[in-house]
Every structure is written in structure tokens, then in C-alpha cells.
Image: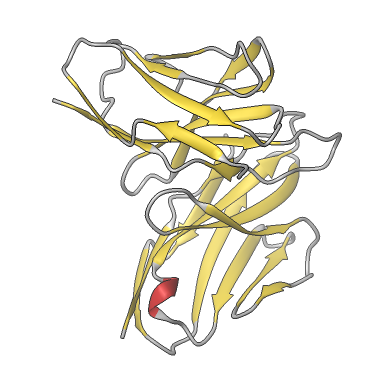
Length: 112
Length: 115
């Protein structure tokens, strides 16, 4: 059974701190790994990673995939209160269908 | 504006009633999906459809039904057979292209509460 596990499940830090969120997976025929941010309602897309070792970056957020370790990390530097959200990791197995398997999510709280 | 709309935002249902959640997209996406989100469990796939008049069960399809009569619309019915329907329901859509993967875009969700 395909499985995605995120850690930690919950994290509270102060504004300005740097955080690292983890995602590990066990899927047959890995295709891509995706990160989403969910503030209140609709998850919004952050990154899609397909190749190992190549960092994707957007402002203060960055992510990298390690196919050997079957994992990915999401880094947020100089955190702001607006970064408070649930961060979801999902993996797309290569099954011919555009399905995603989601992890439980990490709830990140940034205190001023 | 292109996007995905879901209605209603909040829905209250008595036990034993069927309810239908609406999902519409004007992104011209071929594929549409329904997920359920419970606290601490992430998103779980209920049903998905890659083409009109065709759909497949996801991981937790029992007690739910769908239809895909139009490309733009993918309504979800929560039947009385669903034992624990109180949850947040998210609809998503994506394009479908060959062997590559394309990200899913999500609607704002419907919060269903069974009284």
C-alpha cells in the first residue's frame, strides 16, 4: 500500500526562525512529489519535484527530493506569521492515473 | 476568472439523509477528484474521473457516489450508508498529459456536519 508520512505533525516557532518539514514515502513506481500549503480552505500548490537532488526555490521557501532516501524536505527561512498553515506533502505514483497520495500534514504556527 | 467552485460552503444534514455536494470548474481540465479531510489524517481520495462518463473509486469510496455527465461538473453524493460523514470535502481538478504528472488545483471545500 502506498504511504506518505510527514513529520513533525505540529510545530510552533517564533517569527524569524527557520523551519524544516519532512516527508517520507513508500510508493510503487514513484513519479513526482508535491508540496501544498493549506491556510484555511483550498490547498495551494507550492512545488513539484521529480528529479533527485535538484532544489526548487520560491522566495523564502525551498524544497529538495532525495530519491535514495525516499524523502523530501521543505525549508522556510525567516518565517513570518503569514507562513502559519498546514503543509501537505503528496506523492504521485506512476499508475497511469493522475492520483495523489497525501501525508497527514504538518501544522505550522508562527508566533510574533 | 478561471477556477474551481464548490457549494455549499457549510452543509448540515440529519442522519439518514442523502446530500449532494457540488463541484464546478472552468479550467477546461479533464480530470476531477473528490477528497475527504479529517483532522490529523490529511486528504483521502474518495472518487476520481479522468474523462466524461467515466470515474473510478478511490481509497474510501464506500457510502459515496459520483457522476460525470459534463466535463465541468463532478457532483458528490454522500449517502446514508456513509457511517461517519462529518468532514471537510475538497474537490480538485487537473489536466491530463501523457506520462508526466500535473498538479491538482483545489476548490474552497464544503464542510459537512451530520446532526
